[in-house]
Amino acid sequence: MKKKKGLVLLITVLVLATLCFTGCENKDKQTDSQEAGSKKFSGTTLNVLLPPWYEFSPAMLDDFTKETGIKVDLQIMDWDPCLDKIVTSNAAGIAPADVTVMNWDWVGKFGAAGWCEPLNNHFDNDFFEDITTRSLFKYKDQYIAIPIYNDFRVTYINKDYFKKAGIERMPTTPDELMQDAITIKEKGVCEYPLLVPFTATGATTTPWYLLTKAYGGELLSETNEPLFASKDSAGYKAMEFLIKGLKDYQVIDPASIGWKGTDVVDNFKAGQGAIDIAGWAGNVSLYTNPKESKIVDSVQVIKVPGQNGKSRTYGLQEGLSIPAKSKNKEAAVEFIRWLNTPDNVEKLFIDKGIFPNHHSTIVKLANEGKLPGGQTMVEVLPTIESLFPQGVPEWNMEFETETFTTMNQMAKGAMTLDQGMNHLADTVKKLNQSKP
Picture 1 (cartoon, rainbow, N blue to C red):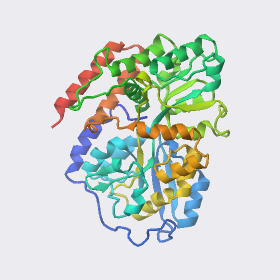
Picture 2 (picture 1 turned 180 degrees about the vertical axis):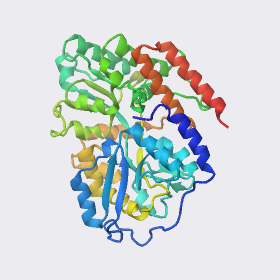
Picture 3 (picture 1 turned 60 degrees about the vertical axis):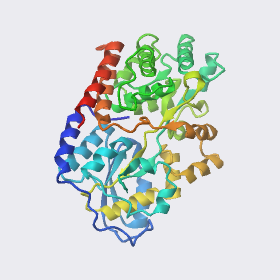
Picture 4 (picture 1 turned 120 degrees about the horizontal axis):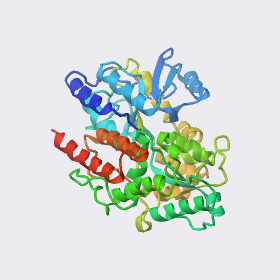
């Protein structure tokens, strides 16, 4: 889901420029107010900058204010401008807000630049113990964000559309899934069954990354060389799946050239598609919520169809970070702690589709029948992998920007499949050569 074209040079230059003078401030650690709900910081106004899926209800924020006396000024921005503001403000030595989103693959760059408040002294070991993805947000020996969204990918299907097309067996491989989409279209059940985005934003890369895993491969070698240029590679087959789905089989809406990831969600829950192939795990709560969805009784979550029936998926976890230049760090800690109380972790899942990072909450929701598709989700958890088993390349943000830009160009017909794949392979080689 993410990153703005042109941000590559900005990040590279600004990170280098700030390394020499920006550092994480360690003063004023909160040690005597470990319970959310303390009114020690009553009267503080907390600025919070987050992307749209964290648009907390006014009632929820009012509850926080009643408990703590802290007011929240919540600013919601689309992912790319949100990241842009975080980067430019931090690089200028100004806090973009008191609490901001942190993506799993920003940790190295942000940590090295000293843009984040170390959180170990604000939260004890018991707090971290129940958080399943905590290690992804550790820079050196310090946590620089608290995980909030256990964002891994599953596949959602509209089982009524499958049934109307005469399909009784759910797909277990990518090729079966494509054939099912073609059948649904040919039977006149749904004109564009397969929902994926092709706009020049980060969400466009996710289906390709996921399908590369599904076809049994990896994007990069252990030495970060490209593995997707040859036609028999998993990465090439994955991109071919997407481009042919759009151009040849026409099971993907041409309007998807302008779609963001949230457009896929909106269309699927409105019944305007049969397959959300790279769906956010938390969206199961939205798709089954009658206040949000028109497909409550027809949506089904399945494991991502994989080569030879072996399902694989990967995580794109998000956390909450406190900028080092924030003047309200202790109040920010109160807010993050409050959001991580069991009741609020559960509420965020049910109301907003924020899949829990807390193991105890996942188990509780499944046992109480509050996790739709719970058995499937439990089966998926052990299949979650890192996108880069060898470790995230330092230039990953640059590569992702080039990837979604290239995919958008291929979707528009400005580049052929082969031209696009060769260009991306050359991009990786150049990025490898440019590293120190």
